[in-house]
Image (cartoon, rainbow, N blue to C red; front, side, top):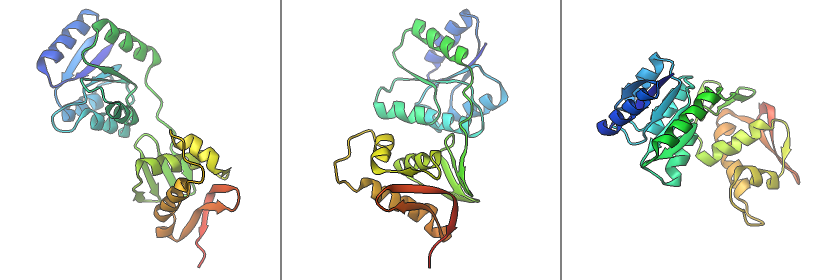
Amino acid sequence: MRVLVVEDDRRMADMLRRGLTEEGYSVDVAVDGQDAVWMASEVDYDVVLLDISLPGFDGVEVCRRLRASDLWAPVLMVTARTAVDDRVRGLDAGADDYLAKPFSFVELQARIRALIRRGASPRPTVLSAGDLQLNPATRSVRRGDVVIELSAKEFELLKLFMQHVDEVLNREFIVGHAWDFAVEHGSNVVDQHVATIRRKIDRPFQLEQLETIRGAGYRLRLEPVPASP
């Protein structure tokens, strides 16, 4: 089994290399994000142990670039950061697990074994509706060859619609699946987000695809239609 340790702290990197080697793993070490991406693209690793705080670009960006390059070795984020936002960023970028420093080497071994048993994650399916495409792996949206920039919440909401193409979704369903908090009764937060998404995916192309079904909710058509004059 081959492991890539991405860690800029030489002492920590040496400790991990030594401990994992004694357990029978073949271990390579990268000390920055650029080397990590290059090494992971050259070698088929069974697990990548990835620190978030790295010189150059950080571990989250490393993970994002690996997934965007269709490299799906299991990634275990190993970092001193314990804030929820940091964990979420890592997992959203494609990490498979998260372990905060200081950690028990026994627990690290257990998590590595679990990831190896699980194997490489399959690349998420690219969602499409007509020429509109949403890639969950790279968190990108495009219509034809045009890249569309969405906020994190807009992306999640559009993904929900694209998972239910040609279905009418009412506001209660949308709130329950796209928000992790209770939206006040009568709030127009859903309507505001839908309007913003329309301005980005439909109007610049003179198309209508995300439509309002009066009295029922919203629907993303399988195919867009020309916008009304």
